[in-house]
Image 1 (tube, rainbow, N blue to C red):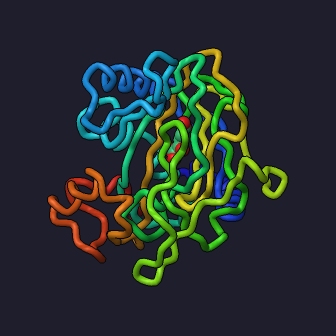
Image 2 (image 1 turned 135 degrees about the horizontal axis):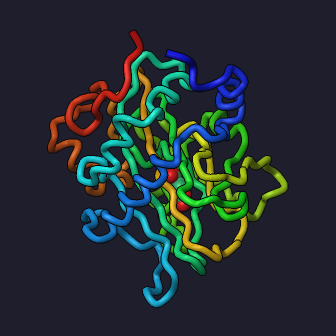
Length: 278
Ligand SMILES: O=C(O)CCC(=O)C(=O)O
């Protein structure tokens, strides 16, 4: 099968921690994912939430880990080109699902995305990447910005809540030799960092390393409702690694109930294989 990604795109992903991919998803996928979000909102998972404290204000909504209950998401996870794209970007022989979610900022929402990296939210260790796929055309200041090269800082930052106020969860600590630090105050020190962000048409996406810091760089308020589907996948080196209490809420419990133990490779019901090279 032909390559979906160029060597230059792989280089950008490795060096910058995020790569913009033009027109890699057919509009049918975008329409399907939009339908999936509509379906999910009508019948959300117990994990569905608004990050906007005042319920009378336009909301910033999220649901996650619904790939197995929303048929449009199931189809995207197993049949879209993403798993093959991810295998090329990460030079992976095998790709397993980690977790999907979607975000929706209603027109007028003042709630924003805190700067964070996804690695701290998961009880896993290894090589992982994230698809960020906007479902409406969006300008660079309406979406997320990535801190160029931050995946190579060799740092782990504590989780930040998306709820207004962006509270950091837990305290600085060392767990199994891994140090978890307070995330840097990116917004007060914008001149210290280089940012990556892109205008996206339908079908464009950004794929980023699980360790790359990202969040809302400015306080722009969307004039139209904007949504995106995000999907985390892992290379074959990835293992289960239970970490600090801040990841413990329902995702950890479900993993433990399903029998996943420290050091296990991904696979099985929660983290199925999506792609394997011959
Ligand atoms: O698109 C958004 O609103 C947030 C996405 C994000 O931060 C993530 O998927 O980790």
